[in-house]
Image (cartoon, rainbow, N blue to C red):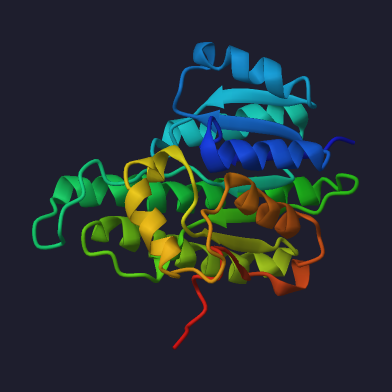
Length: 256
């Protein structure tokens, strides 16, 4: 029986690296993002040379999109083994917290935090239903991708930090509730990762890394995050449900 993994925000960057890694781990992988499927044909042709992958358009901030994604996957494959909540957005304009707008705050919370919460809810209820059916080799897991910004102050994008801190609590809540069902939930916190999202501040981060802001003095790569997700999905960490995996070059280490 093939195991099915859903990865949100998977068209590029960290999400795409996660999807590729789960494919090499043997999962049939469902990628989703807000891009129309017609614009992903070349990417999907590449992925299907590696294994079995599918793409569905989904905006996780829209309830109907979330429900349709889950229902479509269940109807087609009969199971959801892994959900990786990677989809998220940055601030459209970086503003100091004394200037940021309700519109920006609401956008970040709606997509990053609310979207992640209800993706967890939707997947969890369907995973529980699959358990009751007695599916073979069924050990579902959920992995949420947050950020070192979940605990690090950045006053020029406070709403982003708050949305990522919210994901940390979402992970704790679902890890607590789903422990009763044997469904582990994990959080992966990327640090300074070389992606399109960080490209606009590449020089700033390059200088900070050279100055030693991270013990491992290099940019993280999407594959570094993907490896943490793979570890969370391996089964070896299941007794540590709620565990945070830091993919940050040691940034989380408090140093003198």
